[in-house]
Each structure stands twice: as C-alpha cells, then as structure tokens.
Image (cartoon, rainbow, N blue to C red; front, side, top):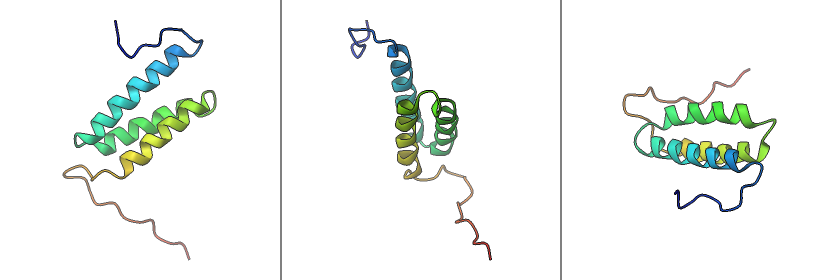
Amino acid sequence: MAPDAPHAQSPDAALDGTVEVALKALRALGQHGHPDAASRLAARAWWVLRDSHPREAERVNGLMHFLARLPAEAGAPPTQAPKERA
C-alpha cells in the first residue's frame, strides 16, 4: 500500500522503515518551528541506536546537524556559548 515500501524485506527492513519515518517526522517538526523539541527527540533516538545500530544512529546524527542550523523556537531563551574554564 505504501509507495515507498521496499519490495524485498531484509532482516532490518522494519528498523530502516521506522527510522526513515522518524527522521521525516522530526525534520518536519523542526521546520515547522520546533527545532529544539525535534533535537531532543533525535538525541534520544541516537542514544538508543548508537551501539546496536550505528548506521541508523549516524543518520539521526545528520538530522541533528540539520536541526541545529534552524532558527530557534519563538520564545526560547537565547543560546550562549559555553564559558571557558580558566
């Protein structure tokens, strides 16, 4: 039924499909004014995937870099660079 669904099912097809949907949803959330919320969710996904599914975690990492370049949410406190330690 889904036009983007793969014809041949690999062992990781469910994981690949789920990550793809999550990435699209988080990208849309970020582009529609909520990049901070999308980044927090993406960071949680990266943490869950990083050890057992590094390829998928790397895709999430790329999304986090995209989200970091989006304008801050309206009403969000300005981000400040970390203070240098003496």
